[in-house]
Length: 199
Image (cartoon, rainbow, N blue to C red; front, side):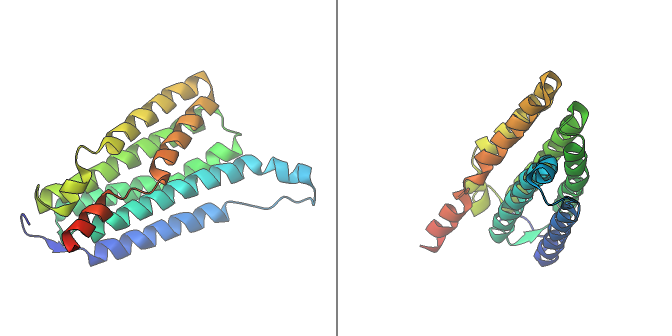
């Protein structure tokens, strides 16, 4: 294990709290239709689908964040700020989700939504690789990350989606969904490495 550090417990607790608040804010932005008809329900469908996509993203970040911090022993100041940056970008997801849904997936809201996801992707990358550097190349996390192809591919796909949104907003959304699908499949790299160490 390389380098010293400070306890990770408060970082995990704070992060869990922020992510829980983010999900709560998103669901509070969902309002039922005023009429009891399928047509009225269809009107709120764009907002609901935007909520589902964002909920999946927040869930993915929570899962992966949990795995990251489960595999390490401590953090340092750089990790704290990287984690704050990640949480800041994720805290913008409710706003961009609501904007995208309210405007029926217009170009600029879809682009801004993608930019927020892109920044969150960078934030997660900074946290993950910062923790790997702190704990050294022989640490479980560093071994699990390896070349981190998923970590590199996500920003590229986000960027393509952002550019594609200028062609048609749904092109952008399709690439965002693709990233979610890539990460939705459970990433067991850390679990496998930790399992080998314990075995």
